[in-house]
Image (cartoon, rainbow, N blue to C red):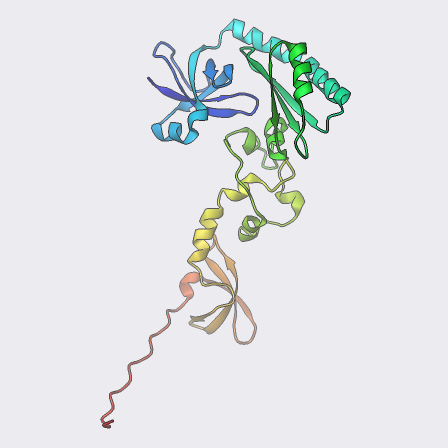
Length: 279
């Protein structure tokens, strides 16, 4: 049975779903699938390899049931029409109970199995009474999901500074940690407004090329060390990693930009002449 990568849900989760032979699947097709959360609408991205399926793990497994029909589209539209009303109802209940949490979004699963409530909070929240109130209002299972600011951007953000859809909402299945060290190594500006994403944290894309920069830097002499060139010894001040060049300083404190290939190998000490003198 063939498997396909399907993107589904408000968090745009990726899964490797099996498809029966009678369902002709192509890229971009909208389908109804059975996931671990229930019956959901999704979009086929491509056929899945065994490696991709293994990487997505157990949580990304499911089964494609059918291509989306006109009735399915009408049901999705009906769900979307009710979202604002459900959101306001949930916010009203939170305010009534005086809970220290910020409502971010609500996701009504297509099959009606549950409603997922996404919220921000500084600590743990006792939402048991809230769940009872919402279950009575909506007559379905309520699942509370505490998220961070990166997940909030994944739910709410649209486009990044690059003009493309934000990565967290497009293809990232998980948001790995990003550090200022990555920005410094890539010689990115350290202006927080330039290297921060829609979530207010460091941009995920700073991590994409970090391993390559790190590997290339290891092939260069360390900053502060002295090298030998055709123009004499030079002290390394900085690296131009992608250009494979070095900023160096000579004995007169004049700075030069040289290629790494211009470094001369350290000559071996000439062998000593044998002595005829007996010890």
